[in-house]
Length: 46
Image 1 (cartoon, rainbow, N blue to C red):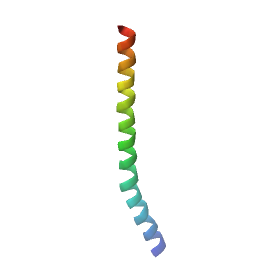
Image 2: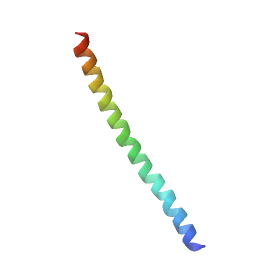
Image 3: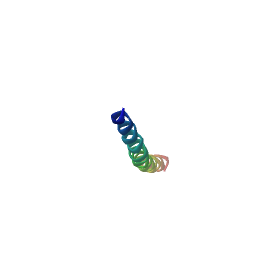
Image 4: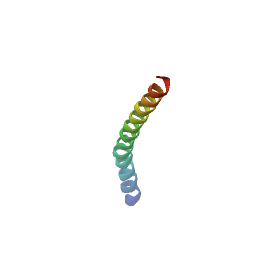
C-alpha cells in the first residue's frame, strides 16, 4: 500500500514538473514556426 502511495506521489510530481516544461518547449516552437511562416508569406506576397 505504501508503494502505491509513493508511486502516486511521484506521478503527481512528475506531472507537475514535466508537463509545464514540455508546454513551454512546444509554445516556443510554435512561436518560431509562426514567425517563419510569416516571413515566407511576406516574401511570397512581395
